[in-house]
Image (cartoon, rainbow, N blue to C red; front, side, top):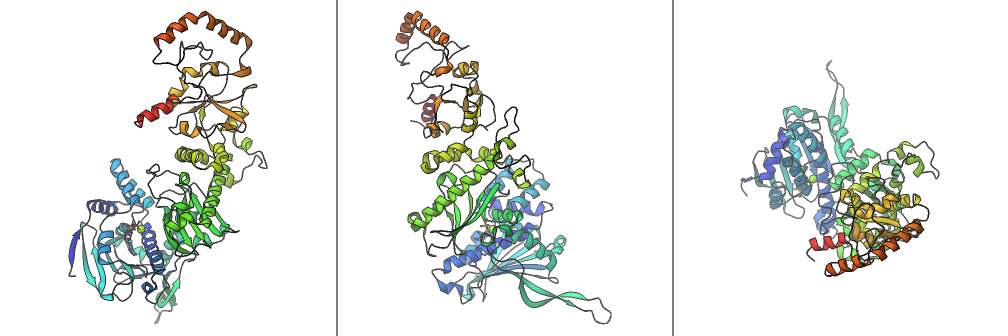
Amino acid sequence: MTKQTHSFQAEVSQLLHLVTHSLYSNKEIFLRELVSNASDACDKLRYEGLNNDALFEGNADLEVRVSFDKDARTLTIADNGIGMSQEEAIAHLGTIAKSGTREFMGKLSGDQKTDAKDQGALIGQFGVGFYSGYIVADRITVESRRAGLKASEGVRWSSTGTGDFEVETITQAERGTKIILHLRDDAEEYLSAWKLKSVINKYSDHISLPIRMRKEEWKEGENDQPGEMVLTDEWETINQANALWARAKKDVTDEQHNEFYKHISHDFEPPLAWSHNRVEGSTEYTQLLYIPSKAPMDLFNRDKKSGLKLYVKRVFIMDDAEALMPSYLRFIKGVVDSADLPLNVSRELLQESRDVKAIREGNTRRVLAVLEDLAKYDKAPVAGDDGVTDATTEGVTDVLSDEDKAKQGKYSQFYAEFGSVLKEGLGEDFANKDKLAKLLRFASTSTDAVTVSFADYKARMKEGQEAIYYITADSLAAAKNSPQLEVFRKKGIEVLLMTDRVDEWALNFVQEFDGTPLQSVAKGAVDLGSLQDEAEKKAAEDAAEAFKPVLAKLKEALKDKADDVRVTTRLVDSPACLVVKDHGMSMQLARMLKQAGQ
Ligand code: ADP
Ligand code: MG
C-alpha cells in the first residue's frame, strides 16, 4: 500500500483539539495510557495464543520497552503483543470505540461552561487512551505488525493529530507495536530515564508484564570534562512485573489499588472500597473486588455486559465474565484468578461449571460482607446518640482507627448510587435475602435521610406495636403528605417512607423482618392492635352504626369505583382517603404497571 491519507472521525478531531489545547498539570498520564494499551495487547496475544501457538513466533516472553532518543527528541513505547493489521490501525486509531471516552465527551459538551483548565483536569482523570499521546507529542508514529501476519504486512500510521492521518505498508520483522512520540518543546522532561521511571512507578506498577528500560551507567568524564550517565545496551525491568492480585495483600498500597482499579474499570474516580482474598478449599481462586464510588450511566441497562475479568493461573481469559457475579451485583469490578478452570474455558462452559458457581457464591458473600462492614460505620444518627460509636459497640471503643474512620459516610454514598440495584437481589438471590434485608435503608417519618434500617426501626417501635409500617409513594413529599399517615403521626408511630420505584416490587419478597411483619399503611383496615385504646374503638363502632345510612348511599353511588366504603379511625384531619384491599395490588404498583402499558 502506498501512502494513504484518511480523516479522523469527527469526534476524534474534537477530542484531539481538546487534548492539545488544554493546559494542565497532569501531562504524565499519557504514559499510563500507552503502557496500559501495550499490556492489553500482550494479554490479547496470550489469549489468542492459547489455541494457536504459532502466533508467539517462537518468543513468548512478552514485555514493554520504553526508550528515548535525545537527539531525535522521540520517546518510544514498544510491545511484542498482538499488534495491529493495517485495517485495525485505521479502525482503532481513527475512531472512538471506547464507551468511557464517549461518556467523557458527553460530559464536556453537556456543560459548555467547563473551561480549558477543568477540561484538562477531566482528561487527567478519565484518560483518553491512545490520543493522550498528543498531550506531549506534536506527531505520533505507530509502527505495527499483527502476530501471524507476514513481515511485509506491517503498517506505519502517522499523524500530527489535526484532522488527518497517513498509513502505509512497511516491513517489520518483529510482531507487536511501537508508539513513537515526537515530543513537543515543553515535554522535554520525558527524555530522562529518571523521570520516566518515576511516572511508570506511579501509574503502572500494577502491570503484570515486565516494563523494561535501557540500563544507565555512570561514565567518568575525560580531560577534566564532567562525568555523565550514559545508556548501555542492557535492558532492565523497572516495575514489579507480577500481577497485583497475586501479591500479598499487605504489599499492595491504596495508590496501587486506585491505579489498578482505573486500569480495569475505565472509571476516573477511585473505588469506594475493595476486598482482596485468596480463597482456598475445594475451589481455589483469588478474588479482587472493587465497589465503584459512582454508578455508571447504563447501570439499569440489563443487556449491558458486565462482570469481572477472568484469569486462569495469571493468564487473561476474558473480560465481562458475567457468570462470576449475580446480576444484582453487576456494578462490581475486579479480577478473579482461578487455579482450577481449564485455560480454554468458554463463556458457555462457565455457565455450567460447578467451580464457577462456587466462585460466584464466594464473590457474593464477600461483597455483602464488605457492605455490612461499611454499614456498621454509617448508622443514621438519631437524637441523643452519635451514630458511630453506638453502632459499633461490640468490640469497638469510642476511638476509631483511621481505617475505620475512613469508612464513615461510605455506606450512604454507596446506597445512594447502588441501593436500587441491590434491591433486585431480594427477588433474585433467596439464599442471601436476610442479609440483603439488613442492608436496606429508607427515609421515615422521623428522618428525610434514606438511612433507617429495619433494625433501627424495630429498636424504636412503640410498646405493643406489632408491625413495621411503611408507605410507598412517588416522592418523599407525596409520602409525607399522605392522609394515611395521620393516625400514625397522632400516636407517634414511625412509618417508613418508600419512594424508590422498585420498593413496591422488592417488598413483595420481604414479608417480615426478624419476626416482625411488614404492613403497608395503605392496605386494608390498619389494625393498630393494642395501640388503639378502648374508647377509640367504641367511638368507631358508634360512628359506624350512626353512619350506616350514609355509607349505604355512598356505596351505591360508588359501586363501580369502590369495593367498599367504611368508617375509619386512621384519619385525623382529612375527611376521607382511598385504601386498597389487604391483598390487593397497591396503588403505587398499579400506577407503575399502567405506566408500563399493562
Ligand atoms: P482502549 O484501550 O480503551 O480500547 P485506546 O484509545 O487506548 O482505547 O486504544 C484504542 C485501540 O487501539 C485499542 O482498543 C486497540 O485496539 C488499539 N491499540 C492501541 N494501542 C495498541 C497496542 N500497543 N497494540 C495493539 N493495539 C493497540
Ligand atoms: Mg487504552
